[in-house]
Length: 278
Picture 1 (tube, rainbow, N blue to C red):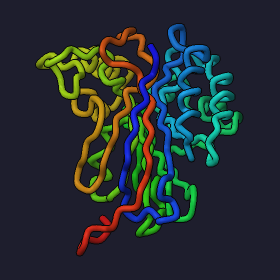
Picture 2: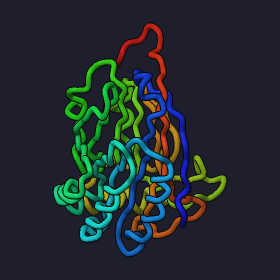
Picture 3: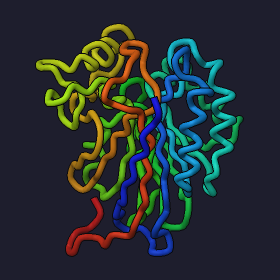
């Protein structure tokens, strides 16, 4: 299925005027394996290049079960993307389960920058924060944001959208994946066209809740039903949940829920009068 590009103009508080038009292309959830590999990824990366990113962000779940061997050629191709500030990545739950240190080593060997509870100033006044995965890792917002100065513009990379409440006091943009948009969208039955059959979304029951039972996953990371796809806000923070590119083995299909490449063009936004940073 051909990925659908989505474009978003995002006013970001404290963004320097010189960075007006800064463009982040967001990719997520490859789930490399039998159904999705480098041949399937190449058309998506061609689309990503055509969007002329300043920076490419990848929010995890590079691999699936026993597919770590698929990652080196994909990481090498990602490193070839035409983005002046390169490709930055954080980990998802499947990356942890397949071997987080090994995934990080492969990405770094290819030249990708990784942020796991870390931050980096990509240009003066604009910071990237990468959070560890909520379901399989141990995310620490305090550790991740140590060094980010007051008054800086911040884009947060978090595989799991359930981290949104933990940054709600800050006027930041968070980019997430994990949900695949539910993969099956039954018209009229779910928010934003995603699958939601009461009392449980089927994808949540089979995927996330199953991971809690079989892998000891953090129950706080069960978030498909709360943040299936698209835009959300909590306090001063905004979140975009990307439908991703691949599919999990639990639900190996997409219907009425095409894969997505998201492009965010940043613009300066003034701080609200009379309010300080949270």
